[in-house]
Length: 312
Image (cartoon, one colour):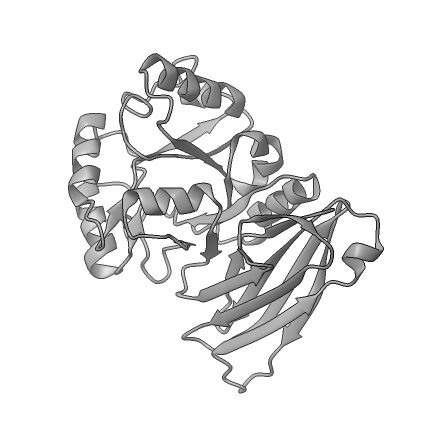
């Protein structure tokens, strides 16, 4: 998110911050929708730099971002139910966008709501992802606590992070927060499909590599009919890794099932591990999720989307 010339912001994201993709949500009200759509679509280049149509939303019950595959009639012009996004609830916003899609005769036009984590539990029925970190707040706990609360209530949500610093310098050190996607191809469709599938991890702006896999699934997937989950992870970082945690969420509880710390001076820049949850089949659980948290020097953090398990 940022103020000023959107074209300059997009050039910064590609040429200075070296981002692979960007979803820009101007907030100063000076950019008309036609201009924004032209700039965003003009910057989109398969295999080099992908842009997504996006607009910020704030209303009763929370705030967040709307992402779309194409501008079309979904986001342009952006007039949610009631004519004012500040008085629109997540349910009404979702309904308005779905109605607009039907009226335009484009039932396959895709959009995603990405709520701020603090309101994730209230908006989980209308979202695939939730923002667990926003750089402007410089706070990992508020959005993350709301997100974990949603998981404890059974929500199937992946993670995202956004700069929200109003600095107009997306991805820059000290101002950016990053959402990484595991996409099948470096195109708008590829990135959007990965976001919808929750194949993501989020960081405080640091360039971490994070992987979480289990039973042929990757972060964000739902695994059916498994008896004993076995999770495999890998974290790599330019800065020394100080701690890795695997968090299990089930039956209204969130707990660390793995918590490994590395002493100062160990200079660990890559960590791998496995965890086999023998308790899963022994207990009467119907559902559990697991996500990875990485810490490194400089107070940087990263979070994977969970892998979700349903016991047969």
